[in-house]
Image (cartoon, rainbow, N blue to C red; front, side):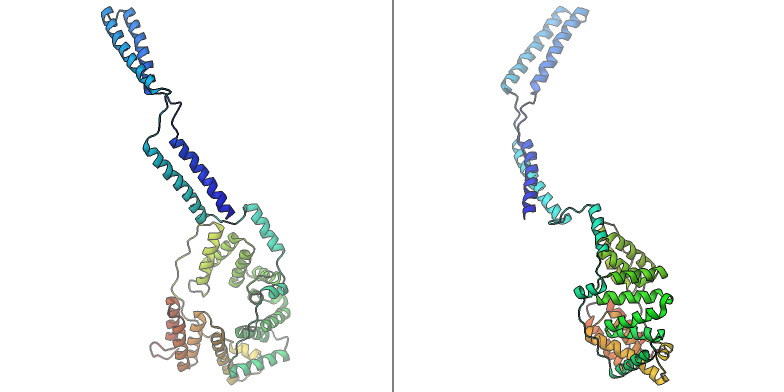
Amino acid sequence: MLFWAIAAILALGCSGLIAAALLRGRSNAVPPAAYDLDVYRVQLKDVEKDLARGVITNAEAERVRTEVSRRILAADAQLQKAGAGTIQPGRGAGVLAGVVAVALTAGALAGYAVLGAPGYADLPRGARLAASDAARANRLTQAEAVARFGTETAPAIPGDEFAQLMVQLRAAVEKRPEDARGLALLARNEAALGDTDAALDAQARLLAVLGDQASATEHAFHADLLITAAGGYVSQEAEAALRTALSKDPGQPEARYYLGVYYDQVDRPDAAFRTWERLLSDSPPDAGWTQQLRGQTADAANRAGIRYSPPPEAAAPAAPGLSGPSAAEVEAAGDMTDEDRQQMIRGMVDGLMARLAAQGGPPEDWARLISSLGILGEVARASAIRDEAQAIFKDDAEALGMIRAASQTAGLETGAAPQ
């Protein structure tokens, strides 16, 4: 309130000065009659000059002198009547002064309320950059970030078949702890179940096994798990993982996205905007992350003071296919039969279904589950999931488009068997 009181006093003071100028009489103004007197005196001198040159006669000169003298007397009388020469403002000046005072005061306060930031101290560019550098230098470690921002989430409860297969997968990895493909499969499945700690343990073991041979994608996934465990905070270890991923592949999309999140968290919306804007321009139009990225990019541009118009939105992406381990990956996790591998694929679907039932998820995950069930030939389950998804996203036209596309893939919309 103190700021607004000071601002109002200053605005009223400026408005008062302008209003006083409009209302004050012009005491030093020269009346029009004074200018007339000067002209008449010049005319008298000109009469004498014309008479001396013989341009006019004495009679004409006398007549002109008489007329000019009469005008001088009249002008002098007007000048005496005006007194000190003060010109008073008209009645409209008071109204104009009031309107100007109100408009300036209200306009100044309203303009600052919209464009300004009441309550914030001055933040010059140098001070903001210094604060950003300090935020970078003082990033929390992963343990500190988890303790401050992490939240306890219970892993999803998978179906019986998938739970049994996860037991087999964990046992196979413990039996073959140097098996990189088995560790990768375990990390991804633990993450799908929502057990971030177990996924982090498996991914860390995987990176240790691979060493310098670890791909950018593996390092980016490690950073993703670290950030998820810390409630979205990019810790020192997560930043290092992102930098490693980008050193191996500067185009790695997940690492580029989270690098923008890091810039945003250290109060560099300009750097976040540049990172996300390039990622958005490089991403396929139907990529699942583009919708969220569009909003974040526009918000970063607004906070950085950058004029930005997002590219046109693409049509809703087609429902993705089955997200799960390939036959080779399952075989690498242990000596599984063909039947076991088919059960693993079905178990992945059960895990996705359990996670959506327990925690919910974006429309892309619901679309993936519908199309996957159709591919497995479980049309009845796919139909039930479709009905549930349509009820959840009934007010989201884009999400409903994804659900319909997935239903067509599953053979629910046309009655055709899925290919």
